[in-house]
Length: 524
Image 1 (cartoon, one colour):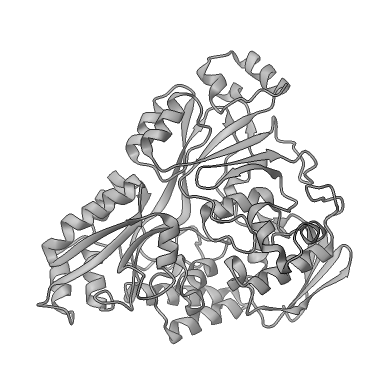
Image 2: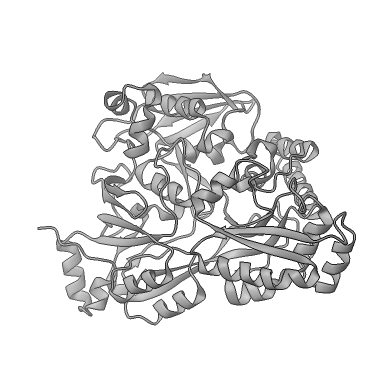
């Protein structure tokens, strides 16, 4: 009989290490994981945010994956070669990899998945649509895929983890419509480590381990079941921990919540620096933040020390790129400073000087730290002459607002981490005009010269030249005050002392691949 062991349950019951090891060996381990945003979709061609990527990395495998060091590693592709002109990539698939129905992963599935991504033109498609044409994707044989690029794109391998491979035969049997959007929006059809057990939209998703996973289960006692509980309510999260039911919290909770859970028996706080930036995105096409002096005034009136030290633990952020990208990082940028007199002087230079100035500031409703930051700005900015209207919204509403200049707020608090391990993910995904209308690009810069810089860096195969361009892009963005650069996130999560194996990966939600975790209470 299956016995569900909620994360931290054994610790809370204070069983001995020997008894715990025996119990885990005999029973299946089920953990509760907390997320603060709903899973809007699980379709690998439509995923956009951290929860959707979290689902994707467990339901699907890509051609490649990413290591904690940020390097590209084999996954469904065991090897690859690149042509001399850097335009043709040939991938050899791993023998023995199967989908969760037991059928083999073949080259035709990769071709179908990438063509489907291009056809639907959603989610990660913007990374591929100008690079690859459907006719450039071919199955050389059952185990070999060839992808011909339309132009040189030097970071191409860094986006191949997002070629999430779909079981073509299964979806075509289950859904006769073109591209099976209804089916794949509801059920996964991948070769990942976990299958769907159930999904209650807005509240819970349960995944169960696929025992035949090609990656194997060799890291200790595996996590057999993951139950995602969707809530941003701090009291609910603390109550889950108090009852011993919380296996892993989300990272977006308040200091008070983490402090409270850290004092509970059976829990630990995992903390690690990241490549993820916390910004206030400023809409440069909408009054009054269309004026650079207003944007600079807002930045100068932001109390960075209070936010980083008290509200949102993080390290200094001088511009759009984290120092983890050391070769591309522009280390001559000055620190962002809090100076109300300088802010007033800057505002006096704006075309709105002498007029009532009002901005709307949006943030994710229910996230305590974002509300605290919003209230801080609402109290500070009026002292320099800017009135702030707070606009708390559920995350899915913020993504809708981002679709047009007119509906995008003047200022929006956003946590953005690279969706693939390259500075290109920071610059192209947020600041190139091709990304307009997405939540990651709420600055609405729409600048041809900036686009040209970003595109040139993408096409360069000379690493030194590429890094020089990346530094020029950073200076350009800082000079125009594209954002208020708050801090580099120190990622914190409350976890059971029995949950082992977490390592940060510099790609959005790839560190939530639960096949890399194991259960061991002896280390508590």
